[in-house]
Amino acid sequence: EVQLVESGGGLVQPGGSLKLSCAASGFTFSDSAMHWVRQASGKGLEWVGRIRSKGNNYATAYAASVKGRFTISRDDSKNMAYLQMNSLKTEDTAVYYCTTWGMGFDYWGQGILVTVSS
Amino acid sequence: SYELTQPPSVSVSPGQTARITCSADALPKQYAYWYQQKPGQAPVLVIYKDNERPSGIPERFSGSTSGTTVTLTISGVQAEDEADYYCQSADSSGTYVFGTGTKFTVL
Image (cartoon, rainbow over all chains, first blue to last red; front, side):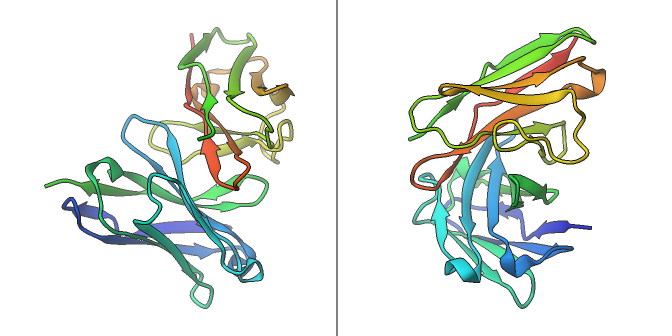
C-alpha cells in the first residue's frame, strides 16, 4: 500500500523558515518524481514544485510564486522528500501535500498545515 | 502564465448528467487530468490523459477534449459525487497548473 506522510508543519512568523518532510512507502521511491501541492483554506489547489529522480538528474522546478524562496530535495536512502521554505509570507499559509506523479498525481499525503502569522 | 478556467459551480439532480468544463488560455495544450476532492480529504485522480480512467473509478466518470477546452462528464450522478473538481495540465516549460476549481452540488 502506498503511503505518503507529511510532517514539520506549524506556526511561523513572516520572514521565517520551515522545512516540511514527506515519508514515502509502498512504491519504488527512487524512481518517482515527487511534487508538493498546497491549498489555502477555502481556496483551490496550487502546484508548488517537483523534484525528479536520480535518473533525471534530480531536476527541480517551481511555481513562480515560490521560486527563489522554496527548495525541494530528496533522500532516496530514507525514502524522504523535503520542502525547505524560506522568507515565508502570510500568503504561504496553506495545507501542503506531497504527491507522486504516475498516471497523474495518483498518490497524495494527508496534508500538513503551515500557518504564517505574527 | 498558463491558466485553466473552470465554472465556479455546477449543480444537477441525481441520475442526471453533469458536465464540468476547463478552458485553457493558450495553445498548445498538453494532456488534461481531473481530480475530485471531498471536504477535509486529499484530492483523488479520476481522469488522466484527457479521457483515461484509473482503476477503481466508476465508469460514470469520463473525459473529453475539444480544442482548448476539456470536459469532465459524470453520467447518472449520485449523491456521493458531490465534491470539488479540479482540472490540471502543464505548460510548455514543464510547470504544472491546476484549474480554478468547480464546486459540484447534487440537488
